[in-house]
Image (tube, rainbow, N blue to C red; front, side, top):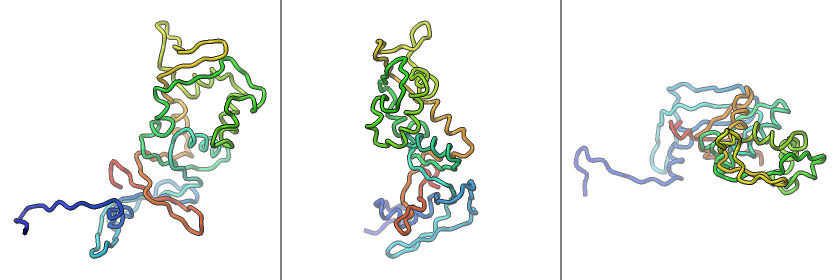
Length: 234
């Protein structure tokens, strides 16, 4: 049947076709490797033309290109360890997260999770730190998390570096669901100080609510990525 005048034809489009017809190249921020020079927004009149099988689409969507020393996709605990190492090495870092920053990855999953540790323990060697040899990102963990636990009382680390200890007693002291000589633990945690610490750094740029849609690969190396800022479509 033909369409009457003014009637809209609803057409579905799959994800692959969406990117092929311009969603990828036109509505994306290109994130490339190099030295961090900050945002280099293109003119609003820039057009991205890309063709489907039988048509060409001109999409007037603003986009920006970012250069950086290190690109990290995701902004959970693992990314935070990477940020710490990048800071020590004087490297600029661009961090992309599809969630609101501080609420994604292990940061988000850690909400309402119980954390336990050995109270008042001072470890003399890295090997004494619990699970120090069982972490997947072992090299990053041993350089940062282990260092904190060897040099600082874990109570101080939990209270001032990783957690806000939102569960409190009536007198304002932290409520520990476990409080024994060998084990202390709390729940309903919210890792806030750690994420805020890194976001405040001049050499760390965070773009959250951004979905990485493609990687730029050349000669077996990842040179950058392309992403879509979800709230704006840029």
